Image (cartoon, rainbow, N blue to C red; front, top):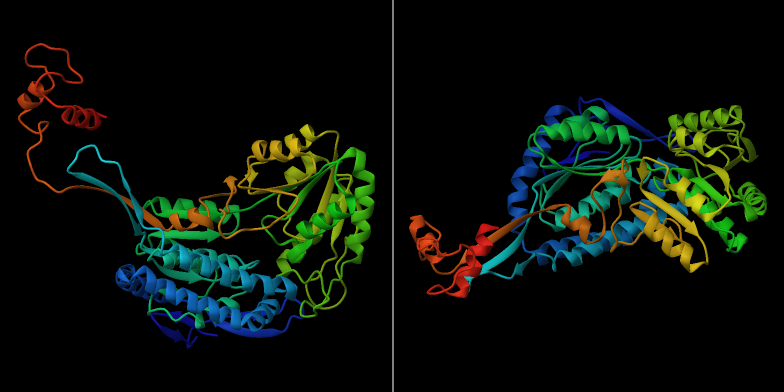
Length: 514
């Protein structure tokens, strides 16, 4: 496929190409160009030029373009989902949902763009009006990972263009095809949204480009740190959703069959390649044995195989590297005393398939040190109380998401107050809402996507103080006027004035001095 620069779809030509292969079969699906530094320069220059006119385009016109795009996405849902399945390896059902979410997020911000523009704040003088005005940031570099390439770019592109920004997209080299196909459906002016394809070098060139005003990124903690460092020179705005190591608490007051199904989905959807996967499962000791037995039995029943088969539950890992990491994690866990009760093995044949794996016998300290899994692995750890579960859940530098299963109202409210995570799900894991913010605390990121916060992330704020009358103010030079009004010249106490000056002047002076 081609990349999109300034309204033109660019062939690879003499550029190197990146092969995109099916993780389930190893077959070559397509190739994309490896963008050069000149390509990045051209894309950013086009974005700078386009953004000025796009920012002046009415909110209604921008909204109409976005809604039309969402309609086309819905009409192409099956086609896009199948392409995403072929390049990403996850199950078709999951990718049908991902494409639907792309359309929904676009629709949400298309409507919000028509209703968010600032506010009027109370003024301190009768002739003064104070406005809070919102402006686009400018040119946004949007970079998304391979696990949800379409959705996580939509969370960036939709609010960015709704706010009047231009966007240069770099899709992940492992799964760029669906993003490119999606943007073929977007009928926006040339330069407003562009795509440069490539690997790490392309990403670095885009992030460091002086014409880029903001970087919106989802990916690893190490990459996020590098973006912060490179953005510091020009003090660029950044929005970063980074790694997670999410706890999942199972209380002793729940229906275990329902709890098992919730845990299965939270831990194994997209083969565990989710930043908010259940990667540390804490189960209260009174139900621990029964929960582990039921979970292990159900994990073995999940269908692992061809992701295009509608009966498949768990598809392939996206890359050989992820399969290797998964295998290594399990081997290290066994060496540390872990017991594999389900899965624990690669599926024979082509493709990067690994059985959903349940492991017991690991300590909290070990699981914490092992860090993010990003594979179909679920370590289960017993706890003696809800207090202990909260303590262990909070014992992490990461703060993306946390899950709690309980029917006890006190425990539920305590969880909402005592778990310092960007997202806390109670009895309904990993459910996102376009109207609610998504993002991490501590080392899991900076800023928020989705919701009003997701639009604010792509807007600058100006305070406009507008006085419809130009007249001299008593606090201007000469200061003798100020002293007279404030009662300083005749020895009276300074502060709020009395005598000949009015209360409006006093209030104005007070506001000014603050």
